[in-house]
Image 1 (cartoon, each protein chain N blue to C red):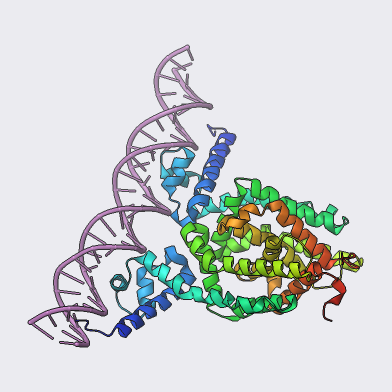
Image 2: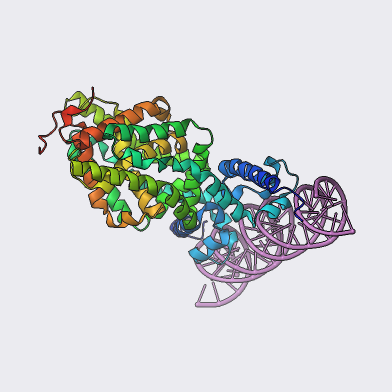
Length: 211
Length: 211
DNA sequence: CTTTCTTGATTGATTGGTCAATCAAAATAT
DNA sequence: ATATTTTGATTGACCAATCAATCAAGAAAG
């Protein structure tokens, strides 16, 4: 008979995963040692990790899997299909702002990007759960709105990448390259401007301009 | 007495730097061993590196410095200030396309981004020679065109990031995440669409763009 | 209730291997 | 001969992974 509750096992496991996220985030996969992780998790032996995980790579995989839920905000997509473009773009933009305010997701984002650059397998996994979904949704949405005649006809995949790329670029400028003026350029201004340009650029029968 | 020509010394040094770029690009800074680099450079000892460079980090720095010239395409900026928006955006877009076709610069781009994510010092250096210049130029250009009344008034920094971010996002989708449809979505289509959306979105009097 | 048995959790030490950096000696040029 | 370049061996540190030993706690037996 298992002497310990299965819940206990799972709780300890999650504790290690959570601590590993912090360590991986701050040092990257390679430079994070098993001892770092053990220390952060409050256990006294790096060996213990192998009781809960196959190896270091397995632990890393579990960390990603645990937190990919974060990226799956973009799963409420179906209800969005009928909403007007401004709503949809603002919603996606605001999701980004929220992410930027969250102390965990930015390091996670950097970790995923950094490891994706080195390991194709990680790139594929991250892509499948995150970016690809976003692109596919937005592409389908834009196509629908073009069919409806709300938006101008153009390559929907390219347009979707334009919008999402704008936001990604802002995150990189701010969080990776720490460009000084990204500090004064607020996420809100960034999103509003991006949405504005895209709507103006894609809507059929665009507005009267101030002459 | 200097027994060897200074040119000889410099040539050997460059040979090591060039080989190091290949190795760093394919394996990243951490996983590239001095032996890998020595082999690639056709020298038979990892120890030789220390004759030409202070340490591995110094070699890496030299590699970056040598190739940051690649990023400095964006130095012909002054003459561009007077050109119309479509020309300027297409020019920047085409610079990206050229980069994507070049077998060296894409790995270099990934290397720089990857190491920037891990090491703030690298991020700052890369930023200063590359992205920041691009942003600053485009921001100033957009402000000028707004003053002239050619473009709508909006936050120029945000708008500049939108455009460049669009292109960056495409590179990431294609080269890092290898999204399947990025293969069929040609760089040309991407650039044309991005320029189109931005012009339409930012021009005063949207009907006047070229057919 | 207390003792013994059993199991899984945890530890610390160890192993096997990698790698950056150093160094002395050899090769090469002057 | 002298100075410089190149080499291969070595050093010392670090680390993933393994493993035998210990520990804690529950179950079973008395």
